[in-house]
Image: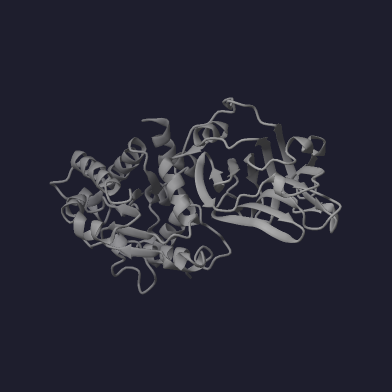
Length: 432
């Protein structure tokens, strides 16, 4: 099995969404005007003063600023790289992390020229690379080698006159002479180019590179353009009966996206076309009605529980069907994004006809790896969370997730799509 498949099976998000990385960064066509390999931990008070090099970035009206980091807190407005005039208030450029979100702000004379944050979050303790590119066309955030947010504003270092201070892990101004917006965590590197790097160049400078589809999912979440999210599958996605009146996992996900992410994401739509008893054969036969008719931008598929108990659908047919479903999703108008989810494990002692379900989860992982599809691996996650045993307390009848099981699946899906915030009602919800 290939490395990505093995890591996905272990439930490692970094491997499930990204390709392996090396610290031997590829050289760009022109070297950066500023490049510091720091490999240093910051504790919310410490910083690195690079002011001697501020002349290299002062006056730049276009270019790229990049940082590789791993956070150890969820503080607001933590600086990765900050350039400022420390003799005046609220003047400067800052690339940072705010409550887990990537932030880029430019301020001058009390005027906020731009201040944008992603909705996707990067405070999971893993190393990430953020690159901000600015040109006349606008500003684009890149995370782990993929574009995740584009805005029309195009302010860069040159939009702020009088820059004399340049710091890693803090920002200086006259209101806080000792610094503000300190950072906690590791910063491996900061760099600035005097030109806009192309996406392959940014990927080559990143410690890891997300799957194309992972970047596209982040772009949808960060965009203000309305999107249709469609979840489909069998009775588990349907949320039939065993939720005991609580929300199913698609409903929890809907609340997180359509309400908690704020306007205008409330104009996104989350549609559930799961049908109790469904198999991959059924979804292929009804694909136009259950998927295509809704013109989705994202299609989540969770199947296998009934396939494992259907004599006419063995592992080879299931694999072929799953591949065909991914192909069908990608052939939809506007290039819809497939998202595969493994089903939860079941009590094989009560459901002997599903004893091979683990094989179907494995096939789902393998298809995701082969076709570069983002995977949410509930099967591995449930087993790992319970020492390798099936967590029966999450099941209503030994097969269908109960309200606790659905909540666990929702949180896993939300976390893997990088919109997990423990302060949210959905992410912080517990069921007694």
